Image (cartoon, rainbow, N blue to C red; front, side, top):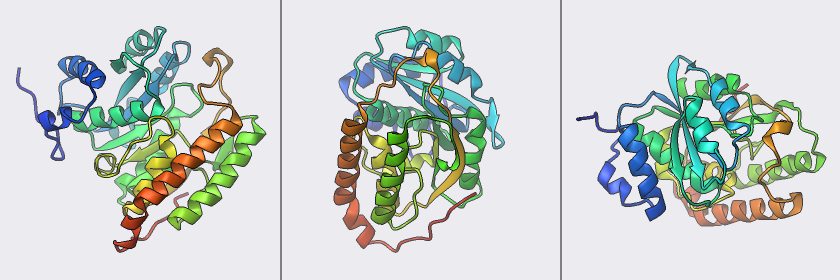
Length: 284
């Protein structure tokens, strides 16, 4: 069976060599069922670890079309010990089931790889726990389609925050201010799980954080010259059936999130010094 080659200069054999052994086995099974180069233009990437109670509902809420683009859902199961993979597949997702747990950042990085291999035009991420509104996917995608941004993050501060954790709310304020200083562009929500990006961005930046990739991705994209934007989105309280959050306690999470952000800024700061900074915009 012949298939169309992936778009955007994606060379399958060369790219496969960049994966870990555990990833290669899972990716081989995924591509045998979902061949490269023939995917939908809008790939919705969902990392999932032990999200059996919630993942099917999230997948079912993803619209079949957003911002005029047909969608497909790619769920990267990160060493789950429950039926996350089965529930996601039953709900209609394309599932890559990695046998070992490595962290959300590693799962997202692999999801970007799969989305590029499938030939998408835009990548969107959303969490598997149901805290974000799939109906708002079109809102984060539109600035990219309009040619105004390369990376668009949702913002609960510009939109609505229905969660009840005051410490996390304070953390969003503090880290938003820190990120704004680092990238010299106003950031109101540095940790929103609902984001959209050009697929080439995910290949161009360095992604090495196994867990706290939200900070790494945004900062590295900004320092490497990609245009950032934020749009108002909603963050719902975590549903009771979704179980407990997989994140560390507030203090430990904050320290590790900060460490990842500072490491990324230190690593990539030279890129910002050696390029002509493009205009960055705020969308509403």
